[in-house]
Image (cartoon, rainbow, N blue to C red):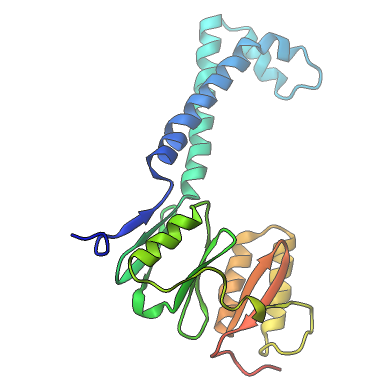
Length: 233
């Protein structure tokens, strides 16, 4: 089978998997054992946190203290690994569809539903036939690898956002938005200011129902309208 017909997967690969599930626990175990070895010294520091725990370790036989410290460190590393795994992104591109996995969640888009794909900083963006956003997913995947995967399978790929100049900085009560969109942007701004990312994402989805496409620069919102947007105020 040709490369064109074989799906291309862009992900962190085996090295990232080893780092998450082996590297983090090993590093955690080493740090935990080191802290256990220095428990007596740490317990004597008036400003050190969890002094009771370090006094407990200091009172244990050396081998038990080291084993306990290493075990706690390994468990901590596994927790960090689980968090990192839940935030992993993988993109599988085929001739007729693209799948984007984020942790345990997966979304699939048919080729006929995607007008163009591009990167906006570190965010992969898929645009639909009305220039609406079908997907905006942030990741640390190499941009050259993503561009190569889409182009290798015949997908339209833009080197930059084709609507970059159409965005306007959102200001409360600014004219030109569909009815109700301004209130959603106000709520989303509060979510951004309070670092409530999930809520900001839900409000982005709701704004898309009005035909409003949003992109963020820091905590400032910029917006544009899709072709099928509701009539503005």
